[in-house]
Length: 95
Image 1: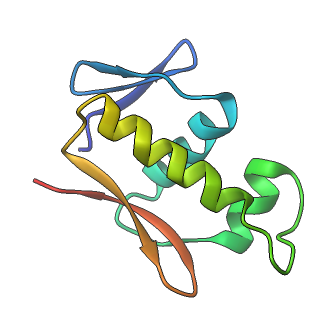
Image 2: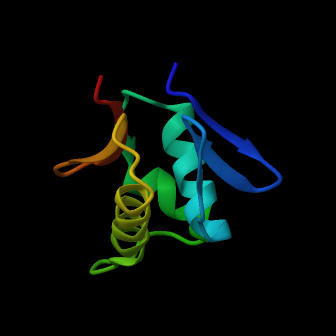
Image 3: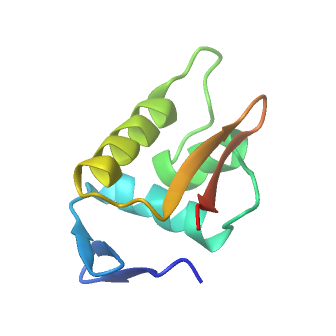
């Protein structure tokens, strides 16, 4: 249980509200649904951005960076988004 929920298009973790854009919220929700499992970028791009990943495309990396920053800004310490080299990203619990 990651204690991460969505209500009225806002993410909440352990009583803290996390202000995210729609794209960031969709991305975090996708990672949470596969928590502990790597989610390939090739799967993220079409589902979140509605297009395939380009050769030098960094759009998802930028969104991940923004989510990480906002989690830190809100003092969320129980979860993290890890990079999985050559694959994509995964949401992990830090307890």
